[in-house]
Image (cartoon, rainbow, N blue to C red; front, side):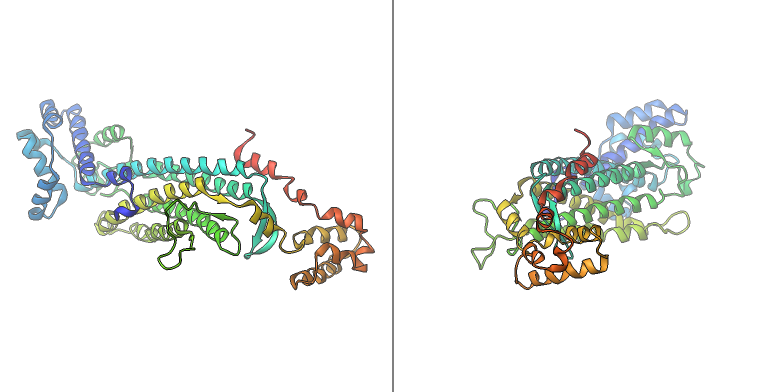
Length: 432
């Protein structure tokens, strides 16, 4: 991942030194378990913990010859541990180390992403209550429909990211799997106790059945979850981009002092952050299909998944971490223009109340088909700039024969559309 879209804490998870530290802990804990089983002497495990070291550059140098990263690591480790290193990795296979390490790394990444979601939820909740009753035009197909509130917009996003948090918590639990079962996963050369012991020390759960690798349906679910979260980010970003369009301009990304919008046009204030988020979401979703294709491996093991995961593990988590943090910043500083909101709300001459008039006519005895005709023929005049809906309805004899003017006026009440906002907020945020 390029530094432009990376944050240090998440990047550190995927750096070589952290990977080798996890490898070391897996091997060292396995040695402790072997001591408890009486397979290796206690002095050997003690030597591993006391003298175990590694150098990234040295491992890279060895791997140039061995063409095998785990062997290169074990060779470098042995250079520091000494003769006792012969007891390291007994009965284990490379996948025991690689897959268990990846489980740890993805769990670490998930913890950061869950914190990111918590930060975003806090920002969304604050803005939801801040604009709880700011009535705005709801749109379907991009066309004016009926009023909603900005509070409901933010509440909807909040509820979606609560679901995303639940999805990620489930994916984290599923990916936190440990496999120390040896070649083809039969435990022929290593006792299952070792796996159980290492899993406990690493915060993982023993894999019930591992062929020689942890089944990749777990990983597919994890990356699919990241893809869903990315799609939710894009949904919020797309909404903001639409609201910032010049013709709408109800909301706007914060434009900082000294910021420039265009190299050619000094007047420009573009939604660059949410456009960026839209693009980053595409990247994260792009890693879902390769993760799905990794599920079908040959027999008990092949490594067709390995090269894929070396890319998508770091890239997907680093990108999503950056995107969540960026979206939190956008929400936190989003500028909303109430005057523009009101202007757009009143732009279409009362058309937003058409459904209420339609229903009132049916309750007054008019068939739904006729009521629709009465309201629509007046609404179409408003669309063509020929007046306000209420005034036109008051001039329509078919309408006034059933609805007197006073009743018609009462139907054009904006508060009618906000009477259940509190109910929705309680559903989303609880009684508090």
